[in-house]
Length: 173
Image (cartoon, rainbow, N blue to C red; front, side, top):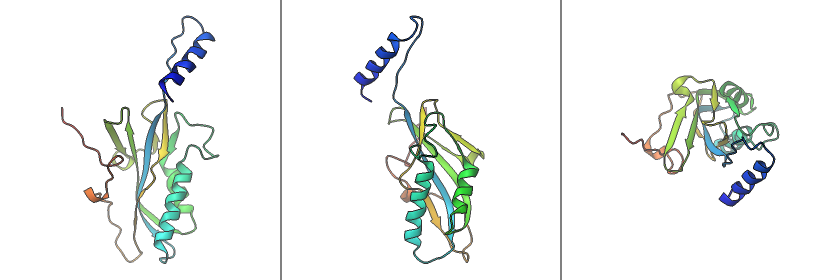
């Protein structure tokens, strides 16, 4: 929201609260969620189409605007195990391996923080702030493998990163 709209909201609330109240009105903090995993499809034909469908279904599941999640935008907690069970329950998924969830946040669009659930074995992913809203990335990092292949750890190279989303520099102080 614009600064003027935020100020109008603050003024409106100030008129309806105690003089001793301190009212701060800010925009929500949108934080991106990316699923990372190895997937084996039931049917190895049309992998590209199945991958697009899976990406779309993960986005629908993660979207706070989804009717199932609409009751809670702010302070929502994402259960990693439930998300994994959802993906495994899709009829075209054979197996899911090396599953993790990446959360990327930025307070000022210049300094970013990134946390991967696989690093700390976190079962639940929360936003950085109470006013954070978890939203899905447009594209998840899904590696398609076949039964014949050995499942390998997901390694991310520079070519897999995207500027403005997952390509983050960390500055040393």
